[in-house]
Length: 333
Image (tube, rainbow, N blue to C red):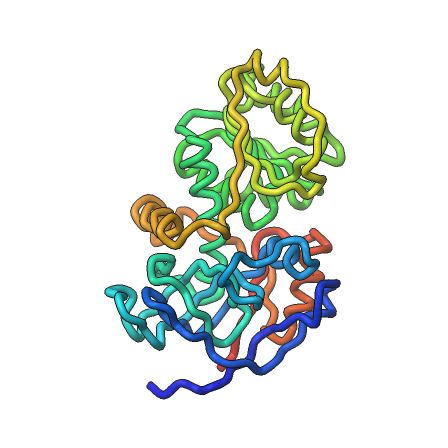
């Protein structure tokens, strides 16, 4: 297969609002050993993309400056040391950047086969959220069947994924969201209790939902004043996992309830991890979650798609925070 020398990609004129994004012509990525080149059919849009666009989340060393952390498409070139995927295979992949483009380089270890009869748009909405949820909820957070699980931002890509996976593995799920419409949506996905945080106190709701037991595991992307409220809602021996801080990273903490409840507070980021570490997450997903995707027991919820050239509109929609599920860019040849 003869590849073009250039491709279309979304570039930034500098940090700023969605209007700094524009479609440009650039060179194809150069593959490193262990990488494959994917002809991108679709690319997921995620909150870290918005943070990078505003200058608050720079790419790690060696990563492309182009936005985009997850793609789906067809493998069109393979570098040395790659046994799988092979040329011509349809895959979805987690990448450290470069997804908003016609072609993207991805470590082979971070590629996964497109499950079941999924199309490219659904497949592109899997990697970033499923990698994040699996490593934080099940590996770091240790969620077990029968436990009470609370996720904030339940209508987001992360939230809708966490609800489905937690239910699939036997947990009781409480999700906090920001509207009645979102409450209905997360209930449909399997949340046992949906809380509109603008109208209800989620701490009180959690105590009622658990019969006074408290929440065993909380996945929080809000931070700020939610920290101590999560502590108040937690069960004895509860765990709280922080993956973002939309309300701020600097907080005041009262240590006594954390000590009395013997709580575990932790957090993580995905993007800076090594290829080997991400490959281990991919292997776990392929074993534990891919069968659920293949049978349709869980699946990404697609809210809206935009052509690659309209990446700015996709970012504006994400910042409006009215979406339920994933926003995806489609890439034409």
